[in-house]
Length: 264
Image 1 (cartoon, helix red, strand yellow):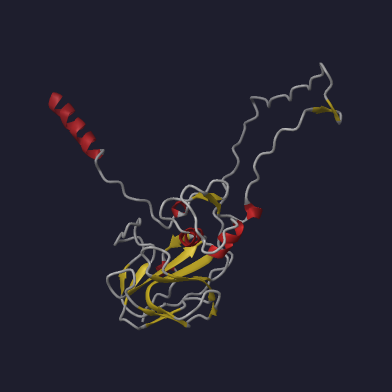
Image 2 (cartoon, rainbow, N blue to C red):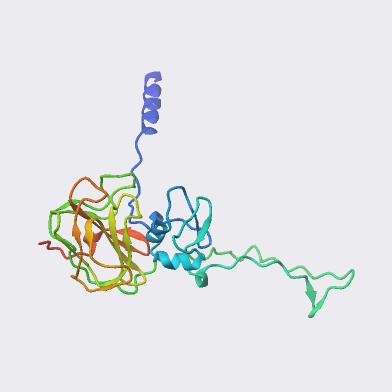
């Protein structure tokens, strides 16, 4: 009996040391958590990275927060990351109590509002269903080559798993726009991505093309599906590859769910 008790305690202790499996990163919880439409800047954040993580054009965030070029932000400040029209207003101060359209006089009291009957159940507000995308673009493969790393798997590179897919290739091979849209970012301002291009397909989808050798489009340009936007390289990584990501409202989703099944 005593030996069985000790064995149970040992198994319980070992179970507490088991590594936890991280939640899938394509869940909405992977997006930046913002209180009342705001995000507090952490060390290492840039306006470009916050815009990318929240599915916005960095110039839009700059306009909402009255930030001018070169878009410097400081750790600790809180930025608006939702449209001002979509932010819940702060509660207003309670107005003085009134009776019959006039302020209460000395000694007057309002009758207390009767509480609901205990028999009447109080239902919590319904949890809003996840909104389906209004329009999903039709995608093509952005580059030729084998898919070396798939969504949600290593290398970690300081992030909670791969947020896209890695397509191997050779230096100078073309990188094409997987869907039509507007170029909202080009540059090397996001650590770990090298020379990066971000295209905004519509108000809900962004696509990212990382580790390029040469960028062939400018910010603000409208690109067609299949248009060459860059050449493959190894900027920000140790091998020639294209890291391709798709973001839905700022949240990484598996590109293989959107790309054609056959990859040539």
